[in-house]
Image (cartoon, rainbow, N blue to C red; front, side, top):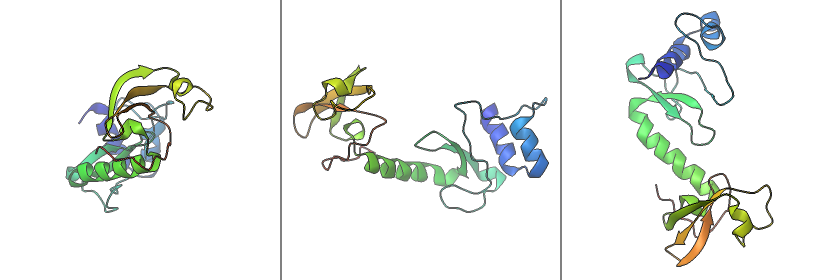
Length: 155
């Protein structure tokens, strides 16, 4: 486990002032602080099965959307992350995560070339590729909800 994950584990099991100090006050042991991109949910409860985590069974898991650091059991991590990925992709239903989509090239202003999304602003970076199901050129977006009925998760 890397240094950041070790410190996150300490925060998850700390209580009261000790937890606050680990979160916000620099010490010789280090500290975690929300610094723009670093997001976390300190807890000694598994994010997937909601049961307490023994310190020997502690694992770090990133959430699918927004990449929050979370705690989970080692035994819950793979299946939990896979289920979360499928659920989140099923919400978006975008070509980018579809089993039939073959990525070819990143396009900076993909939605300006994409007939389905031409009116959407600001410009979206996306992938241009081929849909193997419909045998045509399509665009896929990582941060966009397309809601396509033909979507099949590749997970």
